[in-house]
Length: 345
Ligand SMILES: NC(=O)c1ccc[n+]([C@@H]2O[C@H](COP(=O)([O-])OP(=O)(O)OC[C@H]3O[C@@H](n4cnc5c(N)ncnc54)[C@H](OP(=O)(O)O)[C@@H]3O)[C@@H](O)[C@H]2O)c1
Image (cartoon, rainbow, N blue to C red):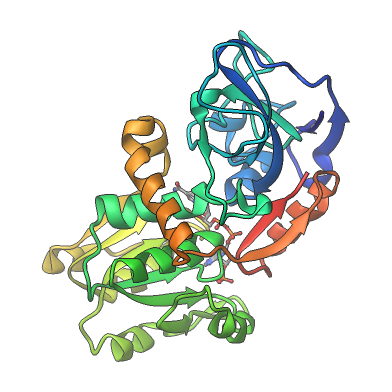
C-alpha cells in the first residue's frame, strides 16, 4: 500500500509518499481500498503544525475522510462483503492506535484498516471519487444548521467563504430546510462561477473584499434582508471587523455559529448582542463524531437520502492522485478553488 507521511511540519514538500506492507484485517475488521479522500482545511493546518491535538508530532499521516471498496474482510464479519462500496464513518479516521500501528490514523493512504462498524454502505448514486468527500462538508453543515440550529423555512442564513466545500454543502442544506441563502465571498473573481454552478444554491451573493481590503458589505445585507438582518451566520472567518459586521447585521434573536478561524484576530464589539438578544456559538463536527453513531447516525442517513434523491450534489474542484498530494495541498493553499479538492489514489 501507499501512505503519505509528513516528515516534519511545514509546506507541501514535507509530504513523502512511501510504500508499506498492506495489512490484513483481523477479527471484526475490514480493509478498504481507498478511492477518494476529501481534502480539508484542517489538514493544511495539521501539516503546518497548527493542529497538533489531532496530528501529534511528525512523522504522521493526516486525513480526516475516506471511502472506497472493501478489499478484504476479517473473521466474524457478516454484514460487510468484499467489493462493497463504503464510506468511512465520521469517527473512523483518528489518531493512530498506539497498541496496533496498522489501525486508525489519517486517511492519506491507498488502503485503510478499520472496524467493520466504522464503514457505512454507500448509495450507488455516489461515484467512487466522492465516497471520501462527503462528511466533513455535509455533516458539519447538517449537524449545526439542522440538528442544533433547527433552521426553519424562511430563515435568512449567511454563508461566508461561499466557495468553500463547507459553505457549498451548507447552502444545499439550508435550501433543503426551506431557508434563504446569502453566500459571502472574499473573491470577486469567483462570483460569475458561483452564479452558474448549478450545485451552488445561493439566493444572493455578496462580495466582502476588494484585493484584501474589506468593503462596506453591511449595506448589501441591509438591502437584501430589507433591514431585518441575518437570522443565522454559519461562519468560518470569525474575526475583527468581519465579525463586527456580522454582529451589526444580525437580526433580533439571531445566532452566529463560529466553525473556523480563517481570519486574523481583532477587537470585536459584542454590545449589540445584548440589545438583539443574540448569540455567538461555536460548532465542531467533533460534537457529533465523538459521540458515535447514535449521535451522527440520523444526520448521515438524512444526508445520504438527499444524495439518493438527487437534491444534494457535491461540486468537485479538482482531482489529484495520491502521488500528487503536494500539488493538491499547494492548490488548496492558494484558495482559488471552488468546492472540494479530492485525492483519488
Ligand atoms: N468546525 C468544524 O467541524 C469544521 C469542519 C470542516 C471545516 N471547518 C473549517 O471550515 C473552513 C473551510 O474549510 P474547507 O475545508 O471547506 O476550506 P476550503 O474549501 O479551502 O475553503 C476556504 C475558503 O474560505 C474563504 N477564506 C479563506 N480565507 C479567508 C479569510 N481570511 N476571510 C474570509 N474568507 C476566507 C475563501 O473563500 P472565498 O474565496 O469564497 O471567500 C476560501 O476559498 C476552515 O476554516 C475549516 O477549518 C470546520
